[in-house]
Length: 364
Image (cartoon, rainbow, N blue to C red):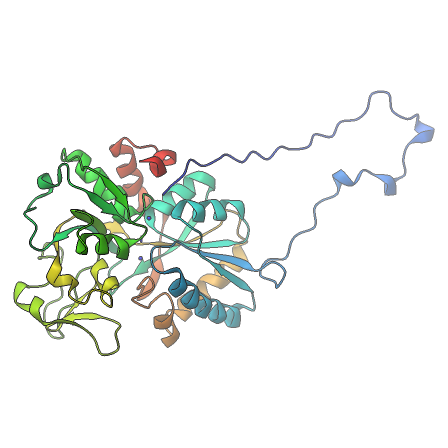
């Protein structure tokens, strides 16, 4: 997971009510009884979290089909309910920015499956705290890829000057932030921009010729069993001699090319465009990006958080995981591992180096 439009965030200021004694108050004989103390001084009653009346809110960013997310998210919710006895409610806000707003509006009872940039923004916005990060086929990082039509004359990043750019969402780390930063540092200025609405849509825009290039998430291809695994620095695309063999697997869950499995964003359009690898190639990659996060609201109760973290770890080892967030049509997480806030400093650095302000990203 992907990993993404951020609107300017309004600042919520919670005013404290100041209670002061009244100068011309009652005489000692008129002092109120203890039972008559103003209600404002009473401590607020704690609100139960994870109940039918107040289920824990689980937010997923809309990086893939919302129906797939809701169906898979509900499978996860059922598993977590069985493991913890708590109640959960799955939601897919309309954008990355909306996901952050929802989490900040529910600091005590929200969980978010959000990409790196979303986490950095949410952390700065209201203190959302990272707990875990995704692992995909053994890797806790991913990258962004630039894709063009296979017969396009575009050969280098410099050739993208003035070309129409399709990207998933201006809040997407791989789909927008990192490529934008890289293009700025290399002196590349795209032409018209197209906010496609998601990674599959961005791929489709290039496939259909509606954009000259697109930026989407990259995950390295899986090689046939017995071959040396792909490593950083290898050709990111499917070997030329395997492209003609690309086809959807019998279970329709993968795009396989002569034993190689496509795992980048192109696989998400395999059903509507099974020849996507033959029509769309990878031009280049960005640097590595830390994987998507599982993060908690800033005031989430520690005991409940620990219980949920363990339940998610346990769930990741079950078969149902592959029907939920582990499904390739969902986020494709194969497992999870612990994460720290410091790991996401490179994303903060990319934002600062790009000259963009976090609150302005949705306007770019």
